[in-house]
Length: 239
Image 1 (cartoon, rainbow, N blue to C red):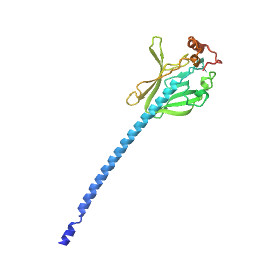
Image 2: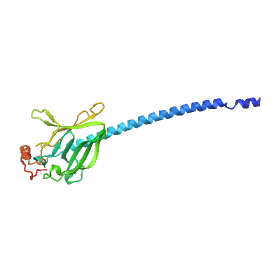
Image 3: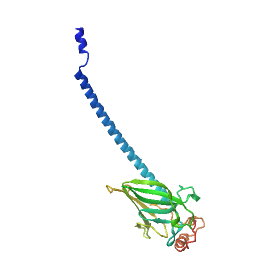
Image 4: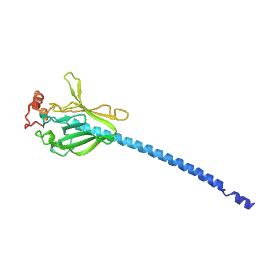
C-alpha cells in the first residue's frame, strides 16, 4: 500500500509537458500585452510631448510678434518700417527680452524650411544696431526649431481698413506701417486639418515709442507715418 501511494504522489511526463505548454502560452500572452501597453504609452507620451512643444512654439511666437517695434531701417528702395515678410519668411525688430543687448532689442527671423519629408519653422536672431541699419546687414544666428513635422506652414498678414474690416496679404514688404495681425497656418499634410485653427498673433505697436511720451501731441502718429515714407537713408527714428 505504501508503494502504491508513493507512485501516485508524483507527476507523469505528460502532465509536466502540459504544464510547460500552459506556462509558455501565458508568458507569450503577457509579453504581447506588455509590449502593446508600452507601445501605447510611448505613443501617448510622444503625443503629449509634441502638443507641449507646439504650445511652447505658439507662446514664443506670440511674445515675439507682440513685442514688434515701430522702427525704421534702410532697404534697397529706401527707408521702411522694419518688418519684411512673405509666406515663408518673416524678419522684424522685436523686444521680447530674449537677447542680452541694448534694451533687449533684436532682429527676429522666422523661416519656413524643408527638411526631407518634413517642414521646419526656424527662429533665428541678430543684434539690432539702430535705425541706420540696413536690412541686408542682419545676419541671424542662434537657430532654434520651433515646429517640425510633416505639415504645411505659412504666414499671412492683415491690416485694419478705415471701415474696420481686415485686409489679408501674403507679403509685407517696404510698408510704412506694421501689420495688425499675423496668422500662422499649420496644416497636416495628409489630412489637410488645420492644427491651430488659424491662430492670429497681434502686433501691438502702431507708432514709434516717442508717441508714448507724456508730451506727445495727437499729430505724433501722423507725423511718424509721414516721416517713415520721406526719411533719407541716413536718417534715424525714435525708439
